Image (tube, rainbow, N blue to C red; front, top):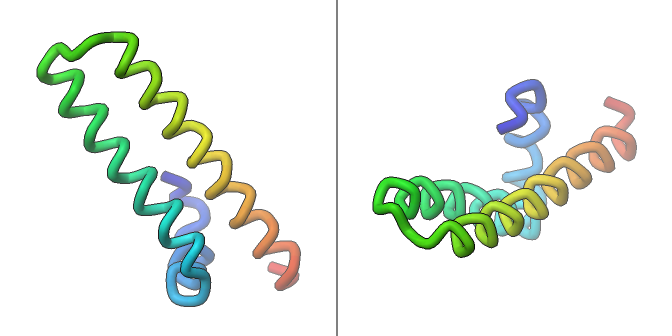
Amino acid sequence: MFHEYREEITELKQKDSHFVKVFEKHNELDEKIQEMEKNHADQFEIEKKKKEKLKLKDEVHNIIVNYKKENNL
């Protein structure tokens, strides 16, 4: 996720505990969704998890963009 922001993500992981929580939660959900799809879980539940994951992805992106802006990167 966001390979173009590798450096910023590395920096944020060291400096921002909220970012770390959101980033890790996104990755955990990704794994959970993959497992649910493999096990043919209820599509409604899968879609619900995907929406939650997308919100987290948006939050991660916003944190990165703000970090770049604040640090003139």
